Length: 319
Image 1: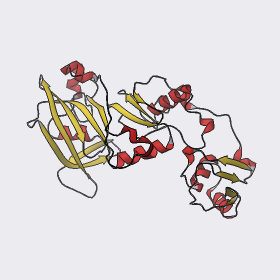
Image 2: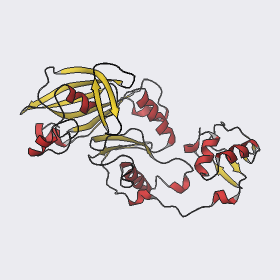
Image 3: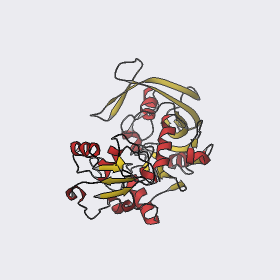
């Protein structure tokens, strides 16, 4: 028998989801049977599969020892770099300026030294994160940015902050702005572009259309011209919808591809003038809560900005 005390980060999890996380080798059929026959109990009483756990609850699991075999922990994040550019930090969240080329999460080709690995390593060294003290929760990212795009990424230090941030992003109560350099000078100083986007998973590329189909999704992109120089334009972009490669594909579709964009732009020519990275950066973030944000209410109306965006500084002396 083993007992688990529900921590703040484990609270509100369903009982079955909690058991899967703490005892991953237990077959689902046995888990459901053990809950039904009271071999898994909450606070000494029979519970339902869907029971929501609360902080301080005691989960008792009368399960064969073979399912509780413990191995020496191996923390892959400890092999990640400690290098982080922190924009803001408090007890609940961490805003990090992700540099271009850094992957936010592991993929099939890269498993270590991702942004989330660096963040977990950083918090571990600070003594704010200890996997041995957590049953389920790990510091996590609330938003993500493409590998070749730089900018602000939000990390949550606890489960409550993560739930709130995900809700605020879903309901568009966090405003994100991008800086980009495009080829040419748009006819309108500001405009809201509309279209329909469809993603080809095999090619990891999106395609735009003026007509709605069953497979594509509506996109809206607002841009504002900031400066021009040598047939290049610095623009600020607001994503009214948020889709894969939306800014890059939408600007290219109106004849103004991003500088240094190898997928939708003119990278071969851009390399000749010294630009082999796409000029796109999520540089500003504002919390605009219209509903209660619980423990994060103190962030309302606060804006955070990346002060030095390399291409804006280099080409337009914009700071």
